[in-house]
Image (cartoon, rainbow, N blue to C red; front, side, top):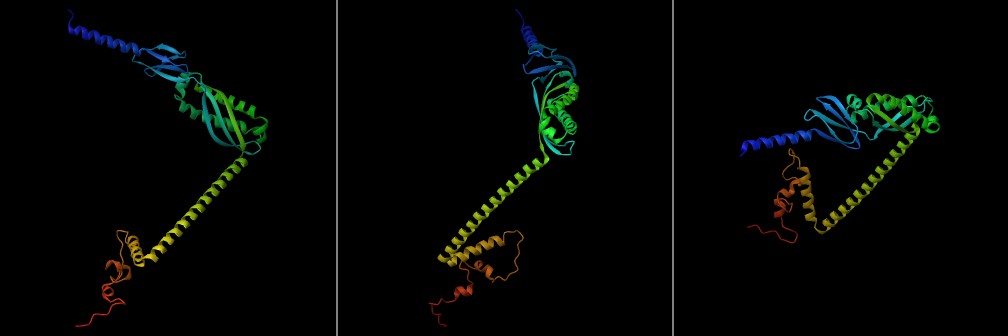
Length: 280
């Protein structure tokens, strides 16, 4: 009879063997290539899709995209050879043709985009600065795009990158200024109309408020006076350090003495329909 220790050892060995086998294989997708790095040093490149073998535990697999990637470049202002200003929108398409060189030079898509943006801007200024405005926007645009692509591709080769295509859209600086001016003018008109509408609504609200106040005053002048005084108290005494240098019998504080707003002397005085009490 086998001892329980033997069974445990067998289970542990099977578990270790399963983990080792799992760590010895990796899969390459159709849209990528894989760089195998052993202790920080590249040792293999897997370009064919499917299952591949690596050394377990010590090899790291770095997937690298093999599809055609897009690079969008912000608008740039370029001066043509006839001193005309151009606003140029450009974008490029590229792919990684040498995974090892790409990994050793830039290491990631984000870093590659930053480097290619710098190179593309330099190529734009070199090529477009040698020709006239008309050549850029009409006569030789296709040929100029080809020259920019060739220069960018030559410089990107050192990063393991192949530039597939470069496209530009150029317009005159004056046209761009007209577009910006029209946009600013439209924005100003919209803001002015919004302010006018807001003032109209605010005026209608104030008129309605005044109407309601007048209606309330006509129905009960005493209550309206009490309400306005309470509002004045709230506004005037809102701050934590508010101070008033007024006499206690001041008209501003008349409702502090009673809800009628009259002083004790006024409250004790007889009304027009009452006779004064005879003195004893």
